[in-house]
Image (cartoon, rainbow, N blue to C red; front, side, top):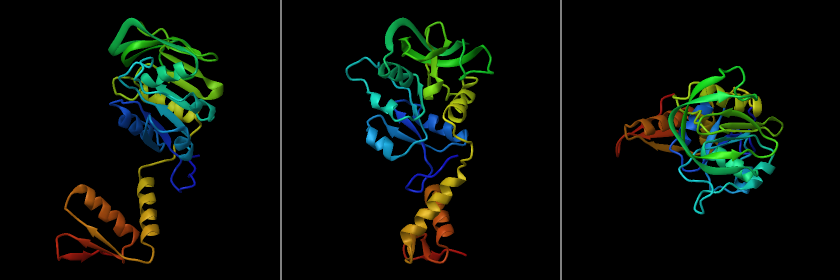
Length: 263
């Protein structure tokens, strides 16, 4: 069940952004699986992550090499929080390195559509043994961390996926969030619902309900003026404010011409 945090907001799945062009897309795919998500920078501390009380964490891809001195770092303490974690591309490699595995430049880069072979595990169960995925990597996991089962492989990534079902940890070298990965959404959903145990109960309508509650709490017994520019953003904001406090707000369409919100 997707319970609320102490702030009253849904407990999120946190997408940790390591500089990926796809971080927001990953968050969108999580929401399409009917799970609430938020994107946070890789610089977020362990205490900041704990404060958000996440139901799971997804580590995004990124352009760096995990063994480079200037590469974004992943604090190994993340895995002591007993939170389900799913690594994608760079996040997969950072996860492997933080848990004692090995990442190396193998000389067999993969970019674009790639044949993936499923060799076991639960992450890809009931999916084709051979499937097309989207790869974008020059480095590869050469040795999986202890306790992890290798569940997928490709020509350029002998370890293209691994999982530790008991610890609710998993990762893949490919990008499940892009449309070119044929079964990507199924794999991401498998992690969210089966590994992390999150039910599919969240919808975008929940965001509107939360915002309405926030407006009511902020305004209280007061009144509000909502400035309208005629654009989509201000129109949506005005609609939410009107829904929250229909008798206590004024919409200002232009200077000197306020119009009271209709009931």
